[in-house]
Length: 380
Image (cartoon, rainbow, N blue to C red):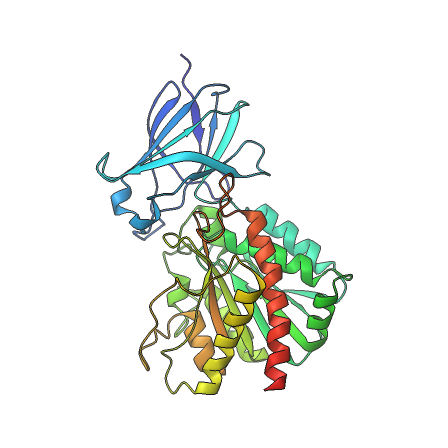
């Protein structure tokens, strides 16, 4: 039997091939550069047309989020357009934690990933198309350690300064799918909600805060191993130029509302995290966050408020994180949006589970909720 071939030397690729025997392979995930984080994988299998693949990703007991593997099914695609799920099983006792993926490709090539990848090429297409839209401006606000541009888009003429940014953690690729949905809506001249938002807000958008980690196939860090969402209190050009550039731009524009878009490995739900523990938090400030949560929960059944992260005690917020730093620094209504790598248990969809399409739809719903939030804010 001819052995399959496995490759990962491409944009966001990550896997180590330990052995191959026919259509079976034993694999491992590379750690992020200068970091112990590992969880993201993305690789191509060729030569298995019509044969059942048995792919064992081993050593997962030392992965960043071990609770992300139970009840997780790998993402797979044969055309890199439609991403479905391959039956997967995690056994903590096998091979120091092993995820076994089984899939029979119809064609000669199949692509596997932790979540549907969002390539840097697609990122450049997204930014270029948005920048051509009427009323949208583009600026390169910084350069990464690998020399990549940090893209920033702005649109709208209103007084409310709204910041949308995502993919500080590059393996959380659902964040840029969300951005694609949000940008498609905001740049649609026929969308009445988008027109109203552009009249009342000025939007500041960074679709990908971590191009280096994205291209390198990292889960959580940039080119030097920095976790960007722990750099907001004192970013530096040497370690976190991405955060430094974004925070400096925020200082220029001010911030009234901010959403930092992420994904969570273990919690099978969409939820928001806020800024309850920042110093000197006033009730009126916190009510803005709670009001937005209520609006979004009413608008879409994909969002819920029962599951999420523990709330920080008063005065004990971690100000190195963007949401708490932005809320504290600007008095903004700031939040972290989390989406699942698995399915959304509240609204399961067995073929794709949580998917790029659902990320994009959620992006549009979050913007529609923002318009309602502005109305409620003005009514007091």
